[in-house]
Length: 288
Image (tube, rainbow, N blue to C red):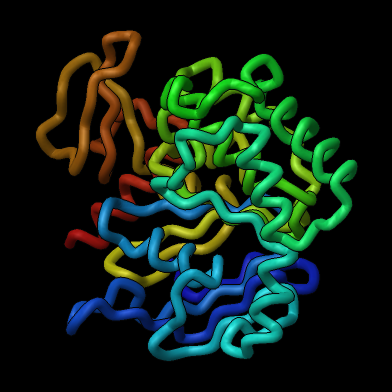
């Protein structure tokens, strides 16, 4: 198990030291320390692990109860610096609230106004740019209430991308997207220097992220690259024609073979681990 490990190779965009956030007497985030620099950073963990609470603190929506947090070299506890952070930050919450009577164009333009972009021509050009980048050029002037759930999610993503923020915080950005739209998300180019993204889809981490953190019970239990997370299961994955009761986890694959996780028996056909294998083994250790 790896804890409190920095994955940063350049100046950190996000620095957290001992972050704590409680709801009543229950800690949702319990002493999180991390340092994240440029690139796309994935945040994995089960429901209730504290991912959304951590992202809300990074997005300056919540203030920590204890610990130290800095983004872009600034302290969000200071009102003036918090405002400066928000000028450089884009945030997609897990359940974005959209004004149903607005069009996507109206909404994105409104977000640009809130971010203090006063040049009307620039705002309109930027609104078109981000809406086109998420595939909504044809519906940008249709009322949001008439859009599908996946389209609404892409409207919220476009709003987060206004002005090419230096820090982009995305909480489950693929929610409501169909398979084609999920693939579009993978190819979406962002000019943001740092993207912090939570997801339940481990394959998205492998496809998008240069580094990954894994949370359990409000704490960071792994920090490293996707390859390093997969490597946690090296030598502990094997396949067989039948299910082995000695495995700690086993499942049937698309080929009809059983894939097993645990200590392989003598003579077992050991196979290369995947990101899913590494995550499942880490989760099993945490449960133990």
